[in-house]
Image (cartoon, rainbow, N blue to C red; front, side, top):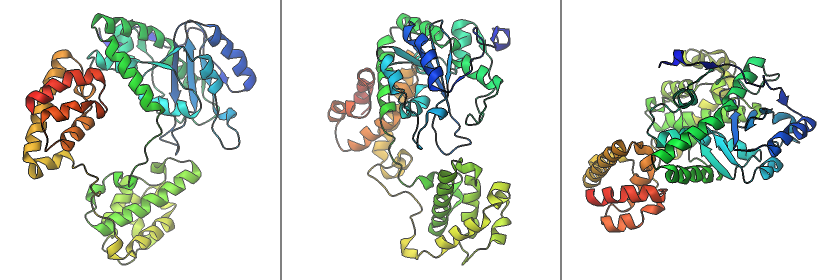
Length: 409
């Protein structure tokens, strides 16, 4: 049956909820959740394409057949601090939270005190069942026989008031989420994968609770930076990125709305051999000819000239300094034996994943596997396998992947 043949879920059964945007409304509406039964379906909406932060601007909650709550965190912020809904989490300490693609939402939920004690991730469950399309609409169609009206995923959820159509969309994301959870759990049991799924849910929850690791040289992730061929050009990218980041932070604006990555890399590639640049020179670069970027030409010129004045001995290297782990694409030339070992192990793990219908990325953490092979490149298989559990692999992953690693070493 094609998507068009499924009945479409277009409006919530209880109507479109109003925002819960005051302490009085929250106290009144929360009673239904405390007195309800079953898991708690949760979703969150952010505005990362428009805002600097990744905080939650709306949280959708639904339990059983009760009403859906659209919780607005903004009115609960105080003195520049995020809202704190820890008391709500305490009420639901023993309740399972159902979240689709929880890895995307857990961080912003934890920031406002919404901390599940138990988790069921419907997207991850679909992956562990070997389902190709695991977006919520596709899973709803496959397991519940209904389509889901979509259309507002990329909106600016920080604006107020929220249009009625957006609230409708938001409520639908949790309308049948618990039903989907039940259907997926039944399939996990049928395929003897519930224990595996629960281990992955727990791992996802633990990872979501951890503070994000600070990135080293985040400016090196600028789009199109591969076009920048010199250390001087890298210095220009760094200065422009840092200036843009500070502007974005101060104005709570997505960095790409101020000047795009493509424009930064184009400026660096174009101006790295100049002694000094002017606003006019920058305005002639095609990638800079956007209203937002043109509005701050003096800022970009100042940043570029600062980079041009840096002594050659202080310029950043073209590539990121090594931290003890060579990227695997360099192994073929520098470590041919390690490269061949990696290719053998990966190929057989991919074959295993196809046989048991669990994606390779879920069967064995690719980064963990590469780190293991790198760390024990001079050792033997027995020593490597003995320490495999230290590389972000869960017990079930170790049991499945260890024999392959040993056989292909």
